[in-house]
Length: 310
Image (cartoon, rainbow, N blue to C red; front, side, top):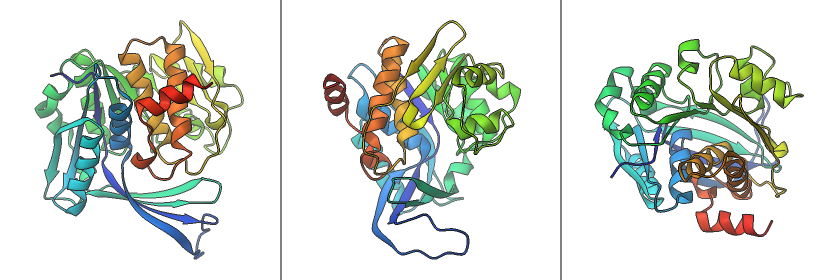
């Protein structure tokens, strides 16, 4: 049965430690509450889509793992969320990817990723997984896998009739031919600044101007993620400003991934853009109230109940 949402991207095992403050260069800090949690931006987005989907919207993951103890854990986590993992292939050339994550008392984090098998996905592999995109409504991508593979997969997805959603993280300058394959670009503020050649530490002062500037690079639509200020949408024909929900943040890991998965689900279900943004903000808001990546992603029932109470 075709999946309505397909995600090509990374699968990582996250090693998470809580700290009072994020360490400066050369500083040692004591941590607590160590957890080993399935993550990776691609797998997080697939998990979110699977967990938040209605029965009519199936989700499929395309990616690489190693032949090691972490691979089975990562695939099992996705399968438990209802995600098809038939296209998650193992490679002997690299270990499964890992991420080292520090989370401070305010819920902010610092992350180091060792990509491993995620970087074993080559552009030449994409044609062999074309069938994974057949019949999909939306295809989600990030930048924790090689850029050439992402570009080839986005082109393939669009040839198969899917709309493409790109989360440009980790942020880097992107070529015009890749951006031309993007239907919806979803940067946060620092990623937006990097794409526009500006200071990644600068806040977005005017979301409308920033979104328009990003859209001029080639994407058909832009969702600018503004953290506690919500998000801003611009597709050239309509714009929406969607406020965030007030919550007590514990850990912001995977909030953006949860947003992307939730938005794709809502759009695949045929919800209007404004409602899809509200649904995505709610799911992302719930995720930051919990520790971890996939462990923090809410279910559809939790998200619907959260929205119904507001």
